[in-house]
Length: 157
Image 1: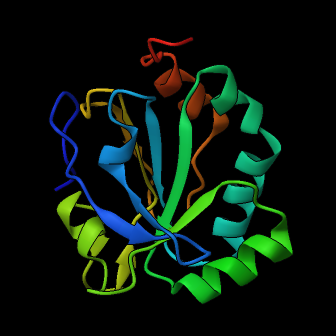
Image 2 (image 1 turned 120 degrees about the vertical axis):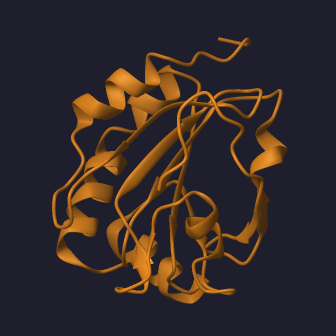
């Protein structure tokens, strides 16, 4: 079961597509975070979803929110995908232990070996303020992101 709104988001430390480690707690007190779990790089639905986010990065910037994509893919796979698609945001590798962060957030699909399409919008204090999950194979809508982002505003904006 996915974590509920108004609960503390579990901290994590994962490598991004360049091998640099990113901790959720590094954003605490600085800016909200949109944590976007997706099943697999290079798959058609995931590519369409992340291209839509790439094309609408201003939506996140206007809300002062850091966009972090996360999947069970390796950092090398995520880097190749980001370069191919021109993603100018951070992708995190929940590769090993396999899906550990997705499991903490309650969105890992054991029978498939990857995370569900789930988004958690986390405020500056580390509290989940909004979340949404779509059915398998169903892309998330930009309207869902807009509604969720409206629930958080960093102090500095």
